[in-house]
Length: 360
Image (cartoon, rainbow, N blue to C red; front, side):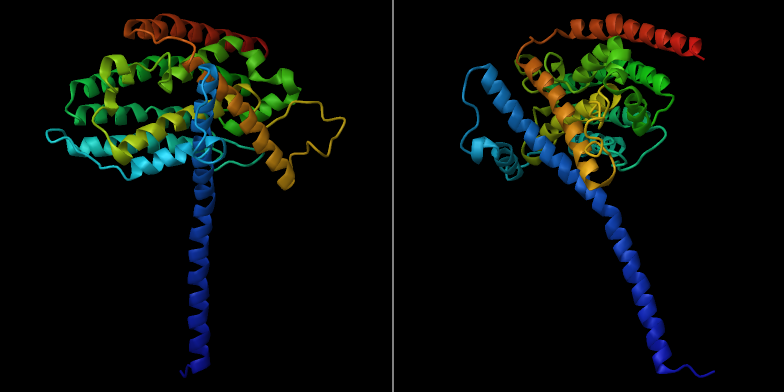
């Protein structure tokens, strides 16, 4: 059998083409992930700037003004400073746990963004168990904090880690029960289905009106999960220096800083998706029907804008709360979680279940 040179060249070029297609396929697979990470990074920078401006306004001072226009690059300047700072390891601590802790805290929160719908069909992975995947993954973050506290070989750090674990366990249960109530109302655990279930009745179809008690419990529990004032017991400066962050410097300290704001953004997005109708504008579209059509690039852009507007509205409430309410004591924090929010969320779930059974 004789094989000509041209045939060999054709076979080689075909194999090269196939390998190039595989490479392009792998690259395109990473494009949405990298786009999401870039968007989240910009979102965090905006949150840091907003927090500084809002806190400055509340305290009647100027706030950041020199780094970029209106001080918008201040967060970027702080991040660059932390990046170039010396990374110090505790001599008698567990260096492995000390190094892994911040990474676990950030990665577990970043993974949760994959199930958030930013607009109509604009979601990284629309899973049937999306909402419970978020709860499962986000419960890993306190493990990272506990590892950091234990690996630091410092009493303040270890106490901060223990507080973080106790606080997370206390407030995750009411949070999960509220999410379960929403899942029962929507007959689905997919975040996209939950938003679409709210869009049937417009503004009055939001779960905010159907689940007002659940909304308040979810709001308080999500603030506690983010470890924001008045629930910042794990890093209380007056008691624990900086809690589990005490021994950290440089990029690792920066990772904790980023993780706290990522968690705040994530919680705000889930409040928008679960209670505020997600990407739906909820204004009667009979006047300009083509404007609110959620198909195409324009519709997707409008959906993203609406989602982010609702998210940043909730962020404003969280930031204003930080500069308004005093810090709770540890016993008050645990009492609020176990003795008040847990029974209320259980009662809310029972009521929701009863109404769903009666409506069948």
